[in-house]
Image (cartoon, rainbow, N blue to C red):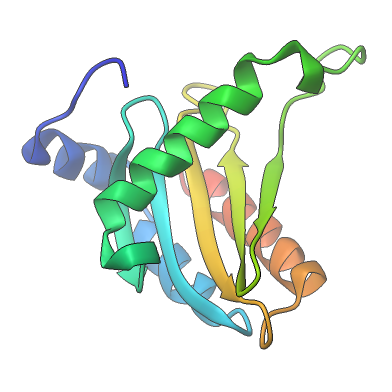
Length: 143
């Protein structure tokens, strides 16, 4: 990752983004939700977390989330020929779960991503994507 924020800088970012805690509380109501976080994908640091994380390490999960988003954003394979067609979300499936990443698009600083980990048996991708879309819209509206 490029620059590394110290914990107090991450707390400052968290205070700049109203509604983070509510967003994560609501994310955990998605059927099958195991854990959720909001990640600054420019640094790989979690702004806020709740629930479980893969390997019980929210910081490692945040760093991994940042790497995936940066890779998808930097590859011409995912760049659309349609003007202003931005990456919205990514879905990674494993044998036991779904890892959903929804970019938080704002007019001033789009560096956040909402990450939700779903249990594959109890989760529903369509329901989760719709709710994550709504949560990100609400989070942006509060800024």
